[in-house]
Amino acid sequence: MLVNHGMNQLASLSIARSYSFASSIAAVLRRQSFLIRARGGGVHNKVHSTTAGITMQETEADAVSILRAITPTLDPTRHKGQAGKIAVIGGCREYTGAPYFAAISALKIGADLSHVFCTKDAAPVIKSYSPELIVHPVLEESYSVREEERKQVSAKVVAEVDKWMERFDCLVVGPGLGRDPFLLDCVSEIMKQARHSNVPIVVDGDGLFLVANSLHLVHGYPLAVLTPNVNEYKRLVQTVLKCEVDDADAHGQLSSLAKQIGGVTILRKGRSDLISDGDIVNSVSICGSPRRCGGQGDILSGSFLLVLVLQYFYLGHAKPFVAADRNPTVLGCIAGSALLRKAASLAFETRKRSTLTTDIIECLGRSLEDICPAY
Ligand SMILES: NC(=O)C1=CN([C@@H]2O[C@H](COP(=O)(O)OP(=O)(O)OC[C@H]3O[C@@H](n4cnc5c(N)ncnc54)[C@H](OP(=O)(O)O)[C@@H]3O)[C@@H](O)[C@H]2O)[C@@H](O)CC1
Ligand SMILES: Nc1ncnc2c1ncn2[C@@H]1O[C@H](COP(=O)(O)OP(=O)(O)OP(=O)(O)O)[C@@H](O)[C@H]1O
Ligand SMILES: [Mg+2]
Image 1 (cartoon, rainbow, N blue to C red):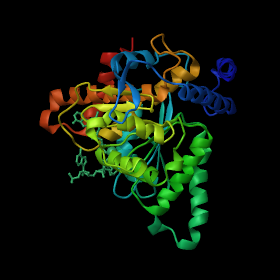
Image 2: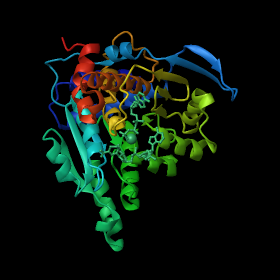
Image 3: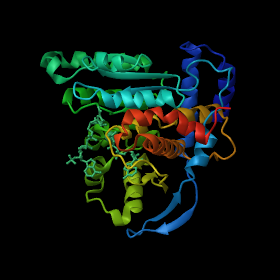
Image 4: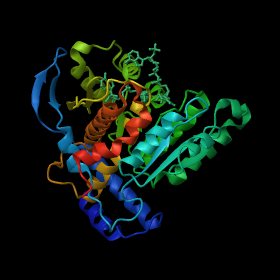
C-alpha cells in the first residue's frame, strides 16, 4: 500500500524543481519504498550446508546483467538531482584523497551532485582537486575545540549536516575520516540522523572503526552497507562473532556476521568480493587489476551505484531482470564491485605498473559504457 501510494505521489512530484519542498517529500517517499524492498530482499540459488551447519545460498552474481538492468536510461525530462545526490562524510588533516576518490567516483558513474562534509583544514585541499564537488568544512577534531565547548560545537556540526540530509539519496561514511574521538562522536550523531530519515548509509574505512565499537549505529538497519577490507573485516569478526577469520568457511562466516548485525549488507573486499545480507552470499570475481594501490576501496564506496539503484527502485522503473524481491543494497554492491573491477582492469591495460587510483577513476565511464551504452 505504502509503495503504491508513494509511487503515485512520486509521479505527480517528478516535475518538481530542485530543492523545493515537494522534492524533499518525494525523497522521503522514495526512501520509504526503498526501505520496504530492502527489508524483503532475497534471491534463491544453490543451497549449501556450511561447516557451521548453517543452511545458506550462494551465487556467483551475474554482475554485468545486474549492472545493465539497474542503470537508468538518460532521460531529457529529468531535472538535476534526479540521477542521484550523495554525500561523503570524511576528510581530515591526514587524508584528503579518500573522500575525493569516493565523491568524484559517484559523479563519474552518473550521479548529479556529490557533497563532501570534512574538517575545516581538509576542505580547501579537497576543493582544489575538483570544482565539481560541493565541499562543506564543518567537521571538527579535538585539537580545535576546547573541552567546555564540545557539546555546543557537536550540536552545530550535526545540525549543519542534518539540514541537507533529506536531499541525499545515500551517505558514504568513513573515507579518510580519521579516528579523532570527538569527530567520531559527531559522526555517530550524523549516522543516527541519517537512519532516522531512512537514508541509505555505506560505511567504509574509519567509519568501520567507529561502527565496530558502536554496533548499535547500524544494527538492524536494512539500508546499511559495510564495505570492510582485510583489516576492517578481521576487526568486525573479532568484535561481533568473538572469533578469528576462518577462510575455510568464508561464506558461512560472512553470512553469520551479516545476520548478527541484524541483516545489514556486507561487502568483504578481496581477490573476490563477497557480498551478503545474511540470506545469500554473492561473489564477484570479474578480473580487476593486479595493482593494489591505495584508494580503490574509496572508489568502490562512492560508486556503489546505490544512487542509480535507488532511482529505479524508487521510481518503479526497474527493468524486468530486477525482481521485486531482490535486496537493492545487495544489487548496489554487486554492480559497484563489477564496475570498479572492470575499470581497474581497463586502467591496467594502458598504465600497467604505473596504474594509480586516479587512472582507474578515469576508466569508470568507459567501464560503464562498455557494459551499458548511453544510447
Ligand atoms: N589517499 C588517501 O587519502 C587514502 C586514504 N585512505 C584512508 O586511510 C584510512 C585508513 O585506511 P587503511 O585502509 O589504510 O587502513 P587499514 O585497513 O588499517 O590498513 C592499514 C594497513 O593494513 C595492512 N593491510 C592492508 N591490506 C592488507 C591485506 N590485504 N593483507 C594484509 N595486510 C593488509 C597494511 O599494512 P602493512 O602492510 O604496512 O603492514 C596497510 O597499510 C581510512 O580513512 C582510509 O579511507 C585509504 O583509503 C587509502 C587512500
Ligand atoms: N587481490 C585482489 N585482486 C583483484 N582485485 C582486488 C584484490 N583485492 C582487492 N581487490 C579489489 O579492489 C577493491 C578495493 O579493495 P581493497 O582491499 O584495496 O580496499 P581498501 O583497503 O579499503 O582500499 P583503500 O585503499 O581505498 O582503503 C575491492 O573491491 C576489490 O574489487
Ligand atoms: Mg579502505
